[in-house]
Length: 190
Figure 1 (tube, helix red, strand yellow):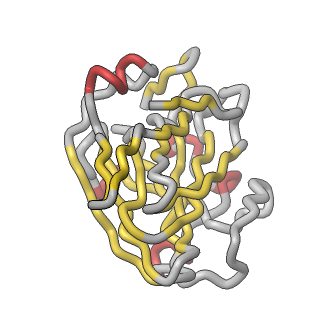
Figure 2 (cartoon, helix red, strand yellow):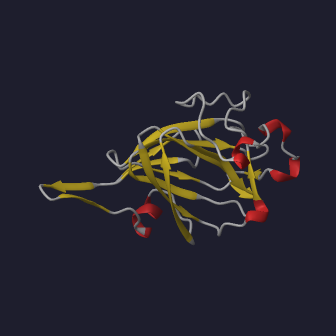
């Protein structure tokens, strides 16, 4: 497995080993020891799968308190996946990283606690899978509007299809201070 550090400390792009032959392919999507060896030492407690059509944008979501880390991947199709550092006092606060994840490139991205996450479907459909470090809790869910001009995320669609909840999220600067996780020397204190 190839682990690629990104410009955002803690956000890791992963390229699992893929074994292909005339029958198809095989790859490990999770192996605690291998992922610990590249710095992902979280315990995952919940797995989720979503199916979406082209042009659908989900995000930017986060939980606080009880911030979630996520190991995300696309099983079929393609998305443009985004992580945004929203940890108060972080040296990279408000910065984002975007990567293409697809069923063909088999890439995964680890989004640590303290980051907002979202993705946009760029293929006709996409089957998206993610492991979470904390159980989903609707009472701690928050979000940031996808097109926040202060973030300047270069989404591959100009008029995405959004849920009503995602369309009503505020800008990062308009979130109440208490809704953001704290940066504690690299860790998160929700």
